[in-house]
Image 1 (cartoon, rainbow, N blue to C red):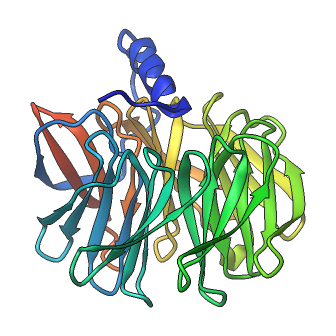
Image 2: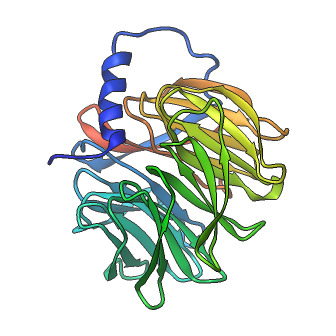
Length: 333
């Protein structure tokens, strides 16, 4: 199956460029292996994943095979495969609704999944090449990174209706909701800017340059401290931006091709997973992150999710000894 998208091309370039590189890690990862759980035949690409803390269900986007895998973190078993989500990229769980949402770039849709039946119950247009997802609880709206359309798609999920395509200006990276100020934040990765959207009006209300960060794709917010972490895909940096002060406060190196990030706020850890397979782990106790581990986990280990109750960390790996697996790890204490 032919895959399209900037990150797929970047991943291929990174794998080629790092194949002949060698060298010690900065520090061993502060993680230990719990299990490699088989997910079936190798796939050529996984993308985002999301845990529902109420049910313990982990939803994994298998982009190459156009399906969402459902993994039970309580039993460590794959329990369901949901097909017919063409070129699925983003996935997010909404526990209050008992729903999971996924973006299908092959059909340019937002797909709604019932978590109790695992049936697809709704589809709605979501721009051109929909990717990352954010949910606003007060307004019951989903915001979709319309990556190639250079907009954010605002969708009323109760009505299953596309409300507006909000112009961002450049290619859109990841999108997240900030519970502290009620705004949606997204990366404009063409112009290397963090953009704020007011979901009540569906308009851009702020835009800030992330100087020194090139290819701002991944995004992780820390609402309690009003910080935004941006993964600089093209120059392997992690940028830390103060939302309260509207300024960049830190910039430091990570593994090549940083993509998906996940935070365990209870343990004050930030995980940055790269297209190169390098995972960087930061302590986020202070005002700026402190790197506590960095090493290659596996080829193309660019997807990560963390359970902030058990503190287990989940990496779907597309090919590990001729099978795809979900690598389950936990912190070394």
